[in-house]
Image (spheres, rainbow, N blue to C red):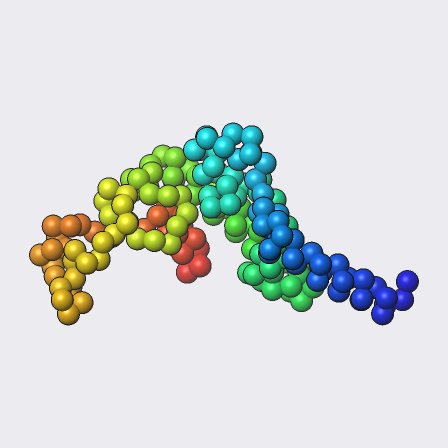
Length: 162
């Protein structure tokens, strides 16, 4: 097969495949077998779900594959290995240990989220601590309490600073 023919076959396959996880069958974008086996099990959903830690989730969306380090053809193999090892260490080892030991009362919040929460695990209502000019009302802040970030966000953010 010539390079030209190979190029057009790959181009055609990639063009057609994009439509399946994107529009026709979005379940193909991220699929977790364990969540399908036990859909009502909260711990399985937290560990294996697409909105959880993603252990065992099957990702068939090319855009998700290349979203972090770009194309695997352009970036050296060692960079992908380094990223994967860091991901496994942070997301599959450190976060579950800290979350399931309830470090910093983390079980009141989702495992992975970029939202801000209050002490009870509800979304932080900034209107309770800001005045009409969007300035901090320290008295109201002391009454309402500190803002809390989910454990997954804190650990991953900490790893990005390392």
